[in-house]
Image 1 (spheres, rainbow, N blue to C red):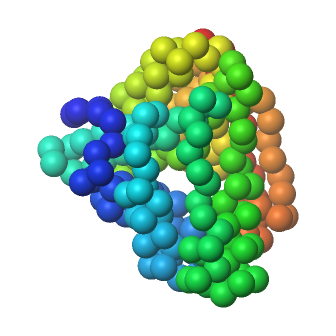
Image 2: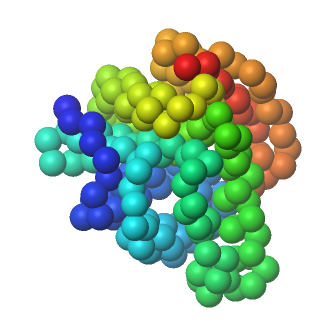
Amino acid sequence: MEVKPLDREEVREFVKLLFLCHEEEFTHLFGDTFLAMEIFVDYYSKLDDYSGIFVAKAGTRVAGLIEVWVREFKRERFPVRDFVRAFGYLKGLKCRLLLSYFGTKPKKDEAYIRFFCVHPRVSLDYGRALLDKALEFAGSMGKRRVSVWLPVESELVDLCVEKGFEIKKMLDSNFAEKYFGKRYYYLLETEL
């Protein structure tokens, strides 16, 4: 197993795994996940810097991924115009806004894990290695706290707790259920 920063050549595979792991949520959100997947590929392909975005490789394949956001990153969010072009004005705007629903803007001393997933057919050891890399990265950036939102039923919740995260809040939301297909989410945090 190798955990490394994302390369531009791995973007399409990264996005495919992201959509596989979040299939229920993204299907509820976008309906047509093919168009949304192309927007994600375009977004990640255009990034100049992949700092904080790591993949775990099983041989030559991406088996897991994690994306850490810190305040110092001046990355643009997903462009609204791409969603409007793909889905029409109202649905496109709604999809783009809903993508930010769990997106917490980190404070000066915090890091936020935006995406974290492991292919369902590989060991959770890939998740452990990715989480270790994310915590190491956040520490190297001088962050004291790391947080992540995860669905309650996700195996990654237990993994995070094993790594020292505490459940700070449980979201019970009809809104989340309507737009993401899951009603219950945990906010997990750890101090570094």
